[in-house]
Image 1 (cartoon, helix red, strand yellow):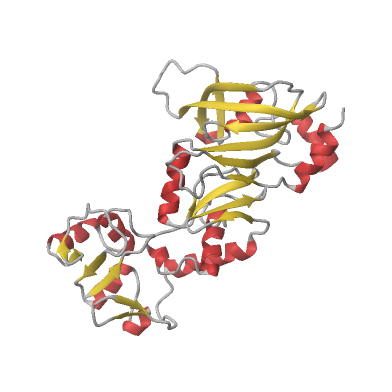
Image 2 (cartoon, rainbow, N blue to C red; image 1 turned 90 degrees about the vertical axis):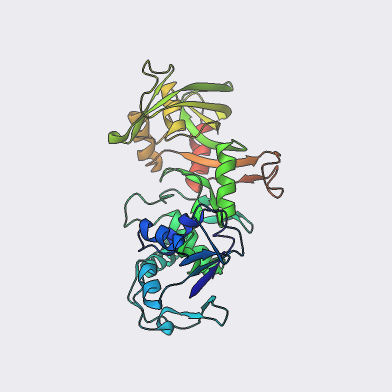
Length: 367
């Protein structure tokens, strides 16, 4: 018999979802059969799989060691080879030995996490507590993978937590810390990350319920002299990785990929040709700020997808600007009771990249 005691990062999910992660090589039909036959139990009792797990719950597996290792995805010759040992009370204990198992997907992932942590430079931590981590992402770093070979902020996060000892390799089998909001590769600034399952769930809820306000800084083409709030409808073109903005909802109300969007902006400094803006992302959709500002005749400088090619080429030649100048500058948590006490009213600000600061001086201040 083997057992596992549910940790903070495993609690708050259905038993069947946990089992699929913990025994990744087992078919769903097998798992439900084992539950019915009481070969898998929860706290010593028969379970259906729909039960919500709580911290310190104990899940027991009445399998042979070979069967257990097979469905865990390991090729094990004996107890020591898996790094696991069954204690006198049947609980699975972690032994500090070097595993003598075949290279598994998990081991490869761990190498990937450490590689990302050590090779992705310029990522700085702005805030961290037991459950969440907020970082300042530099231009050029993916938030999440675009293809399997990529290294992204998501892998960096796990490598960082492994290096600190805030998560163990065993915990990664059933829970992966992750980013909770996305920025384009060439957009810099604040990314919210969940270190634990409760942290990830909380941030997802806070973002969904708009209990955190997100402010960006950018430089747009043209002179903007007044505050404004603009609304519209965004339609995705997946093939072109681009979006279109419309002021009115499509006649076909079920049009695939159409979303209501709202963006507010406030000019901070301007010249006759350019304006430094603070933009509040009230809804959060793909390319929203870039496409929305372009739709009103004030595209972001450096944005070749939605912007002014002539202006962009000139700025590239003069200042080496090669991508949209957009920075997730500040987040503000509301004082709502749904926000954890430690985050209520919290304001986090991320310094702008060096090139952004230089362009503010050279472009916006020049009249």
